[in-house]
Amino acid sequence: MNSRISRAAVAFVATAGATLGVTVANPSPAAAAMTICYNTSQATSFASIANQAATIWNNATTNLTLSPNCGSNLRIYQITGGGSYAVRTSLGNGRVYIDTQQAQQYSPLRIMTHEIGHILGLPDNYNGNCAILMSGGSAGTSCTNPYPSTTEANRVSNLFAGTRSAERTSGDTGGAVFRDSWPAAPATVG
Ligand SMILES: [Zn+2]
Image 1 (tube, helix red, strand yellow):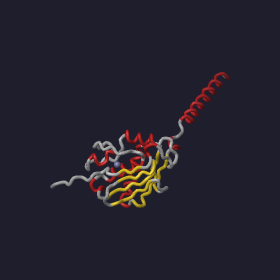
Image 2: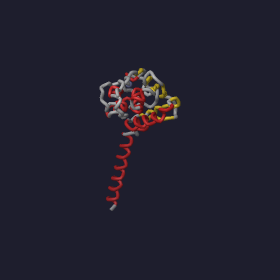
Image 3: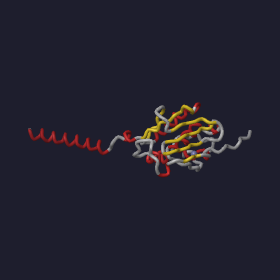
Image 4: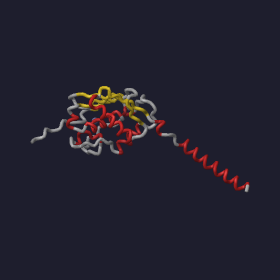
């Protein structure tokens, strides 16, 4: 009888040890996520679209969290004319400018998620494929897809793997300006 109790105790300890081992081997991904505070105080009519774009990126990626009202890693501006573009000062930091005139031709949400994609480390990829977010305006004004492809989202997750602050500047994800993503659409006739 004592022997059976002893075996049960050993089994319990072994199980607890295994559980502890898993916990230590896999720290919570949330603990390593980099917070990118975005500021929409000058985004005017595009503020709610910026929030939608942040949710899209947060749902599609790991290792980073776009969060409003906590700082200004990313400032979002509404402009009129000149074209939408992004200025990345370093990975996860910079400014996004959304042109109200382009937003009448192209999907405002697609423009917003695309330009934020530059801040998150992605280059343009003008292949005309609407399933690719970074194809931008090359997919035409009828393309309203605001979601990054799995490949694009995974690339962002990998770029942010291990980051814990907004200070990282390395590799090809440093400062850069991204313009001309959204060419003027030809005038429609009739
Ligand atoms: Zn672009």
